Each structure stands twice: as structure tokens, then as C-alpha cells.
Amino acid sequence: MNGVFGWMAGGLAITAAIAWFFASSGAITLLYNEMGGMSMMGWVVTLAPLGFILAMNFGLQRMSAASLALLFVAFSATMGASLSSVFLVYSMGSLTQVFGITAGTFLVMSIIGYTTSTDLSRFGSMLMMALVGILLAMVVNWFLGSSALDFGISVLGVLIFTGLIAYDTQKLKRIAAGVEYGSEHGRKLALLGATSLYLDFINLFLFLLRLLGRRD
Image (cartoon, rainbow, N blue to C red):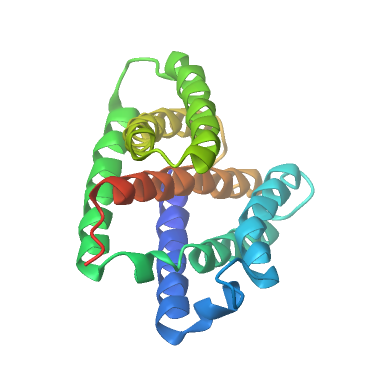
């Protein structure tokens, strides 16, 4: 579990650094064309994280821990590039505040997931179904443009990923209990676990930003 949280924290640091660099250096303009739409590079950067996740999961048995670590670093970096626009949309003070709220929520829910004796596995399927539901709602609202529906999606997103943090932490704790400490397989699982918690953190941050973020 130390490896999981260590890699997750490292991934978040890489993402934040790359996002800030793209926004402050002007490199973010490479992601958009003259009409304001996504450029070819923008689409590559946006879709690349999904490719890295699939490669890590399907390559778990074939790849070494070092190879998976490189994929995780590349994944974190491309996520930073794809999220760099938040520095242009929201104020730095707002980003800092929401990040602090996200970190505090993550810490509390991770402790709950790690220490509770309640089996959270029964909530996992419900949370995943709810996640699929809000993804569909986001697609629908992309056409409708309803501010009320957008607010509802954001609230549900916060609740879902808050729950997923506790659920994933407990699941990873149980997996770690059956893995030999320091083994190659253990290091691989730590990287996949870090990716899972990383995504929970990032998505919680983005949904909170939609609710609490200021643009001034």
C-alpha cells in the first residue's frame, strides 16, 4: 500500500507540473487549431491516457515492473497536458482551494476504506452503475446544454468518486494482503492500484472544480 500511495502521489505531481508548464509556456496552443477546436495533437493527447491504461492492464503479465512504471509516468504526463486548460479557465486561488478540498476528502475516505470492518464490495457495483449513468447523462447534456443537469451531474460525480476512493482503498488493501512484499508481481499491482486511486482523485477534483471553481 505504501507503493500504491507513493506512485499515486508521484503521478499527481507529474500531472500538475506538466499541466502548469503547458499553460504557462504557451505550449497549450499546440492542442488547438485556429478555429478554437481540437488539433490533431490535441486529440492524440486527449486519447493517449486511455491507451496507456489499456496497455498497462492488458500488459500486466507480459511487461516488467519497470516497463509498467514508464507507462505510468507517460500516462501521468499526458494527463497533465490534457488537463492544462484548467489553468486558463479557473483562477490559481480557486485551483489551490479545490485541490486542498480534494486532498482532504481523499485522505478521509482512504482512511475509512483502509480501517473499516464493513465490506464495501457490495457498493462497488452500484457505484460503477451510477458512474455509467452520469457518463451517459454527460453525453446527453452535451447536446442539451442544461445548466441544471450539469449541476446534478457534478454533484453525483462528487458523491460517486468519494465513495469509490473508500471502495478502491479497501479492495487494494485486500489484494496487498495476498501479495509477497517486494516481489515483481507486487510492484506491478502497486502501479495498477496507484492508477486506480489516481483516477479517483483526478475525477473528484474535476467534479469539485465544476461546482466550486471560480473563473475570476
